[in-house]
Length: 318
Image (cartoon, rainbow, N blue to C red):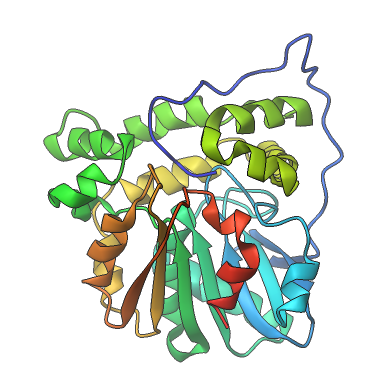
């Protein structure tokens, strides 16, 4: 999923249909205790000897927001390190600034014995990928993004506004002073984050209500609705809405655009031409501010298109 803004159903609470029984959620394969005592967690899957790709999920999600068949990564010769970003899953909040987060991911790479890697990021995870690339320099071989959300500074561009759905209204409110990033965080946390523990059936219902209807059958066929339901339940189980609040504050406060010029790695910005959260105009705006970036448009794809064409997305990171 991704932070899409207003106009989504309010996250539910336990009912007679969805009893608040804590599901048995999968544990990450690796946890690292950072110098300040916080945990940073990931799943290290795929081909152990393959090219390392660090995956940063969207919101409100966690490391489980990927294709459920990790054999696809292995078949592509990829060692996939799917990270719980701070405030999601097992990774502790608060999220640091973008560059400090990159330094912390560098510590995780050291722990895993990985010298260099590519970064793959979805939606709200993209700013954190840019921060990592800027912080780690040539340790990052390339950055591949899907449905990158626009930073606050981009909403002076009419094309970005037209391609960003409800997020454009939120950005306009913040820019005009009618609301603040903290108030937006309060509202979106209420809309998007169910109260833990989240029964899997409740999480599944929320996924069905929020994904694009045109994608639902394909997501079901690939087992992706179930995977996203487990991701949502695990994302909020330990830290409730902390991750979403961190993401909202990052997206709707100035500063993200300043990091773009520090990203020296080649960047591929992928957008679906049917994405109603972050369409191709966002990618073009970002490409104009990144030193080495290209934009790739996937025909017929919405905001969840990377999951439906997971091998193709991963191949761009090799």
